Structures are given as C-alpha cells and as structure tokens.
Image (cartoon, rainbow, N blue to C red; front, top):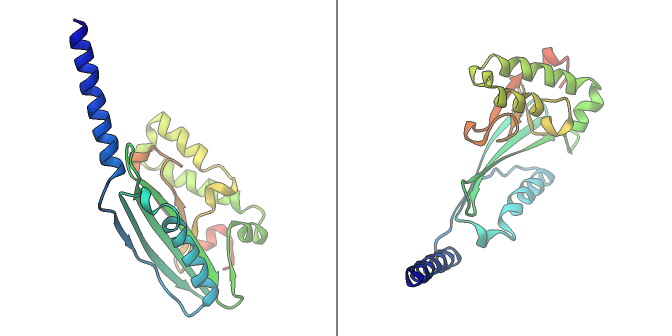
Length: 200
C-alpha cells in the first residue's frame, strides 16, 4: 500500500515539474500592438507611455499581448480608446480598456476631473443614466449581477474615468468585473450631451 502512495506521489511530482518547466520555457510570445500616431507630440508621448507600460518590464510574462484602438475626432478633441488583452497564465486572459482625451487647441488632456470642474453634479447624472440604461437589460435581473451593476455605477470618479468625447455623446466604458462577472465582458454606453447638459 505504501509503495502505491509513494509511486503516486512521485508521478504527481513529475507532472508538476513538467508543467513548471513548460511554463518557464515557453518559446513563442504572440504580440500584436496597433496604435495611432498624430502630428501632436504631446499626445503621441502619452499614447507611447500607455503602450510601453505593457511592453517594458512584462514582456517575458506574456503568452500573448494584443493592443488595438479606436479613435474619434470631434470639434477640437481627439479621443482614443485602447483595447488591451493579455495572458500571463491562470484561469483566463485579462482585458483592459484605457482612454485618452486630448484638446488640440489647448494642448491639454481631459480627464474625469475636468468634467467634474465643468459640472459638479456630473457624476450623479452619469450614475442615474447608467443605472436606467442597464436596468432595461434582462441580464441584470439576476440579483448578484444587479448588485454588481449598482456598485459599479455609483457616482464616484473611478467608475467613470474611462470615457471618449465623440460627436454622438460621451462614451463611458466599464471594464470587466465593474458591473458584471468576467464572462459577461466589458460594456460601453453613449450618453448624449444634452442629457448631461454639458458643453463640449
């Protein structure tokens, strides 16, 4: 009986060593990075800084890294969303959304603090609109998911820090886990400026 346990333990140990060896000796890393370049030096510098964050020190940790983007131009604004996905091992890949909003005229970046400075009540408006929007979706009928959505749409800065300025309105992005479990994905909603009473 002891021999069977020892044999089983040795087999298990060999499997673990093989898995560790395989993970530490991966030969191929799939990296695809796409990002825009503009005639605005300051904007390009910030875009590059965001991209380099994922490339600089972590390169050996990836099985894959994909970065793509979409950009919007509206009035004096260039607004960019970066779609980032990467896998370093574990249960599933990671997905992140980052946004950059740049005013060509003033050569300045726009973040959630700038929107709050324009309208002290904007976080409440964003929260009310988001909750009404998501409450009309059947997936939020589940109590656990509904509670996540309520928490992820509270009127706090962190919940609304990723946005784009577009001709259709303010696009708000919600990363995975913010308003629903991971497997539901990430979400975005477009909120018209007239609802927000925001002059952009």
